[in-house]
Image 1 (tube, rainbow, N blue to C red):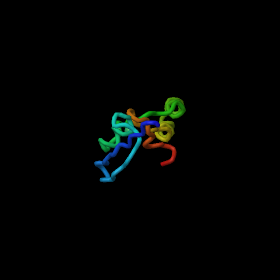
Image 2 (image 1 turned 120 degrees about the horizontal axis):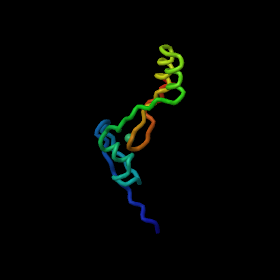
Image 3 (image 1 turned 180 degrees about the vertical axis):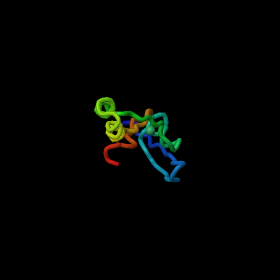
Image 4 (image 1 turned 90 degrees about the vertical axis):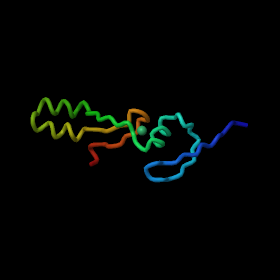
Length: 83
Ligand SMILES: [Zn+2]
């Protein structure tokens, strides 16, 4: 029989209780327990090219190509194009 330990977590942000099979040292669970993500802003290569080639108008395109990801769990927090 496989060992299926269920871990219980408490989200400090929302106060939600959560049961998960992921261990406490899993990146996603570390983020959950801290209530925040280790965010990093990345600019897409197309946006950077546009910013250089069509300066200053391209800077707007660069911002559209911006993505905010979590360095720890890799979650995409802000997909610039959709906003
Ligand atoms: Zn995260």
